Amino acid sequence: MPPSTQIRKIVLKKSAQRKAVIGGMHNLLSKTGTPPQLIQMAIQTTDEILMNAIFDAPFSGDCYYQRKTERNKDFNFTEKEYVELDLAVGPGYLAICARDQFGSLKKESVLAFIRKNYEKQEYKIKEDDHGAGLGIYGILQSGMSLLFCSRPNTKTEVTLFIPIVKNMKTFRNSFRFFSFI
Image (cartoon, helix red, strand yellow):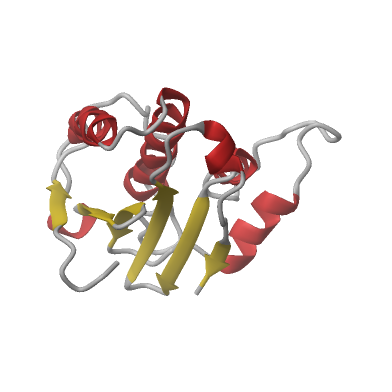
């Protein structure tokens, strides 16, 4: 985004704030004239990256301690568990970045999730593998652009880039990418 782009910063301090953020995103995207189908895809993707930051990233010792928490449970975060969300609307694109303070996402895990073909092999949850992987797989199948930046034991940032388009045909023909740094 250009340096003059206004960035809205939100710090989630409890799990229930996720729903309010998703509602606010719907309003923001509606104002850009984004097609309803693309709005729905963007909201689902943002919800997925927020859930990953809230439930799959928290790590202590050798345990991903929020992984088995019910996704609709309302609980407060410790300061280390705060999740930051940045929203920016620039010329031609909307960027949404979710940031956790754990840096527990590994490139190998992400690549393994996207290599799987769930239509040809039965899906099985592995108890020793944090995160199901269906979210990332689905996001990439939808044609969304994602940038993963992970600094081990420090932070993970996942940024979703959404082109501001007037119809789904233009979206499907737009530039897309996937990157992990």
